[in-house]
Length: 197
Image (cartoon, rainbow, N blue to C red; front, side, top):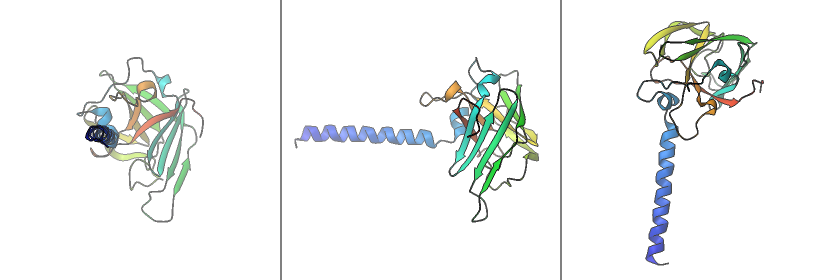
């Protein structure tokens, strides 16, 4: 084989490896960093409305799954499958009744989805799945830079997405308020029809 084709093959393989590394770095970033950038949250699209929440949303940390089936009538159902428990030989499966959700908006353009009765154990490691909501402590809102209560409920921020590749359906994702700056638990739309999987 001549020297020129070897150089071309080497250049092509090198380019493919660089692109693969760049893609890996991008997708390995925590969801919160992709959505909030340098600390300021990305607003949802200008035409966002409550109807855009309708559908099946899912957050995963393999093998754990947290699924939210959101209906346009102000109700939702949560389905959890959790294997990463603190004790061995066990898993947790849960399906709620239809519970209530409502939307809050702020003057700065942020939208918050309040979900009554939400369980946080799939997203928060070492959290008891029998606990409902966030308890008496306050949870960090990275968009407003403040702590808010989530007693008997969970609060999700409706965020736009800065990425140009793999833009989420409807241009939005849902992020749970955090227990620390290191934690992020985000839901992506997997089905636009709110049916129980």
